[in-house]
Length: 70
Image (cartoon, rainbow, N blue to C red; front, top):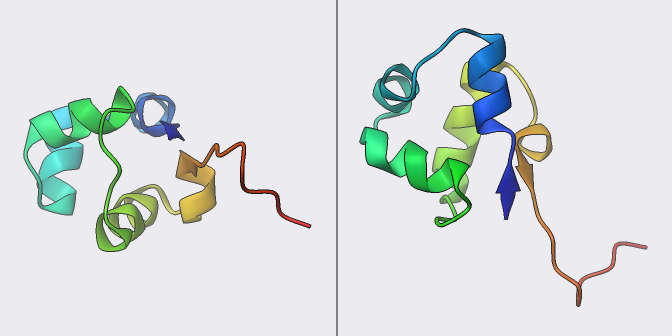
């Protein structure tokens, strides 16, 4: 799963530490999310989207070759 977290943080001039604090996780979690090495719970995805005032789909890009929306 790809994310736009780094891009959104830059737009809001926010550090990984600040985002982590605002959504209630450790900074390492934000690092792993940004690198695509961790898939967030729905609750965490919602919290991150709310911080940036965007939809979850605007933060997380789900890429699955077997899944096609019609």
